Amino acid sequence: MFVFQYTQFNNLIEVIEDIQPKIIFISDINIKSFSLFNLLNANRNIAQIPIIITTNHYQQKQHIEYLDAGANDFISVKTSAALLTSRIKSLVQKTSIEPLTKDVFFDDIFINSTEHIVTKNGNSIHLLNREFKLLQFLASNQNIVFTREEILKRVLEKNLIIDTRSVDVHICKIKKKLGINNIKTITKIGYKFEL
Image 1 (tube, rainbow, N blue to C red):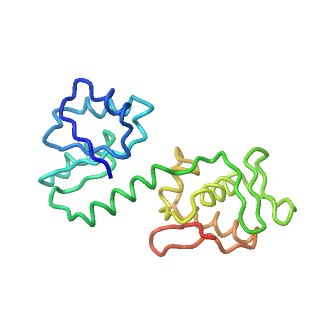
Image 2: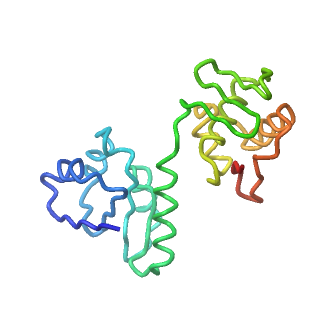
């Protein structure tokens, strides 16, 4: 992993755009205001890069403010190398999610994004719009575990108040309609798609 340290903020945006990092670490000591988050989140090329705050102490109110401002996670400077590596991999993986725009093949199932249809052995299977989006999302991001909350935010009606258990109902219907067992339940967490 290549690490680049930069301490000058006057042309930080240009530097980030130039090197295109996979993740950005910011020490809470260096955060004088939330203007840095505003700059990062206002730039479309940078807004998708995960931001981790490194901290020497825990102050819940301040951490909540940082998360609300755009940070993705907090890590203590005392965090072990193994835990740090694991959390970085998880963040990078989830920010590399495939969009809902590509066709997907698995077994005898074909998900056609352009025509918005699903076929099994060449026969069209009727899925509701939410079911289609959910199946396409999980099948496009195989072996990644998503919580019910993440599925609601990324796929379903993010602006409506919907019980997370509605995800269970949609997945149950998808599995029944297609006769598949590729969508695995991860106890107390959510779901992932396996071949």
